[in-house]
Image (cartoon, rainbow, N blue to C red; front, side, top):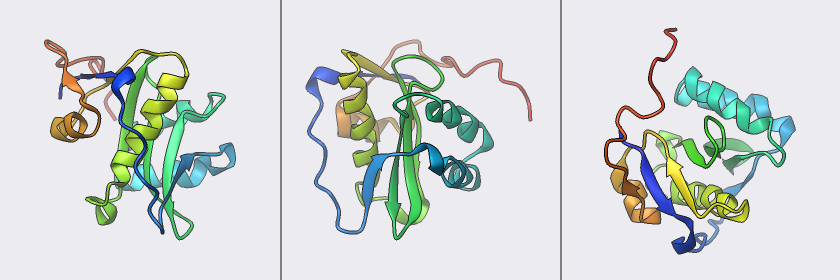
Length: 152
């Protein structure tokens, strides 16, 4: 999957809040349920990567919750400075613009940190990122930074 570039000066506003979903920055005391959600719905590698975001101040992990449960996440500044990802939404909650809310919350945070551009590492599906934040594929970015990985 290619990396994608986002011009943070051209970000759309955050989408309107949904009545039963909250998108917000995670708190340090929520690390266990957030990482458990990522491990069970995505991968251990993603949970490891996101754990770095919990070590930052402010925490660079955004979560979506509904009825007191994690239903999605988006992290930035975990594997590389200025990089966004990983991010994911529970399959049962997809196609409800929750991912867009998480994505834009993280991108607006990167902009507030002073970045002019952000890189979405190993982006997929690229159509989602192109639509939600006008991200463009970076030529020759495959395989990107996620190479020479340790086997599990």
